[in-house]
Length: 316
Image (cartoon, rainbow, N blue to C red; front, side, top):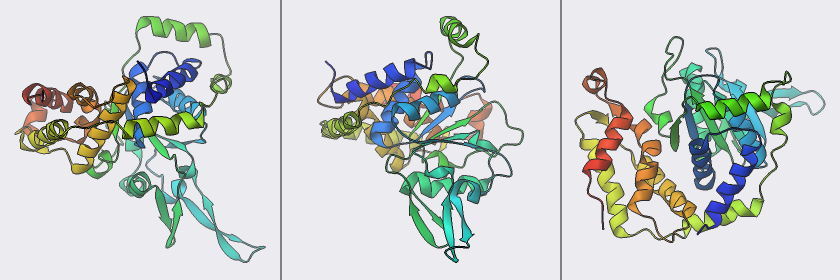
């Protein structure tokens, strides 16, 4: 049994599959973020198709795509926009930057300086930007897809906790299996023109399907026991000796909202603990700040989340 949310994911998989090979977990994460109006942080090595995925996702959702390359000299005005003097009108007019697209890819976000990273905070949370004492609304379907390489630290600025908390999901993108890479070679091995033409093959899914998916996810029943389970996970993360900064209230909301979408994906009428468990590694791990001792021992944020899920009793 599939409902409106499942139909939306199937449509996105179909259109993304015309261009992108594999990446089913990432497609699911993007579907969750789209329905729940969240943002996604893709973490993985360069050259794994993250940019192609974001461009194709924008085409499949019928949105405008813009790419921002994170560099040390990137300034807030480069992404927000600037006021330029209009000689004919004899006044300054605002020229919006790439942040005003529907789907914005911030490539290597951790290479941008702290000032530029902070300029994204208002945009991601309030869906608006401020420039020269004026406030400008961003598109209603504004969605940020950011990438970072977790293995390269030279010339980077680690994302502060306040910015990591703005990302609803963090997905670790690994190398594809051999069969998927073989399909990539078959599709694109003889082409010397890039993938721009391939992206054009993706057609927008029906606009009404997204609205129906959101309404269906919002209508799902959340029991008091399930809500208490989510709160227990948050409290345990704050009391874990390996963690110095636990799950925030924004993170608790993100966990429940993402679980709603996952329940909708399986066609259920209520949210179950298994739905929470499925999205917890994506929604909780990047929000935890580990103690230095835990990091030295090789403990990762994902390890902590797995431990919490095993330790906290599941409601019946």
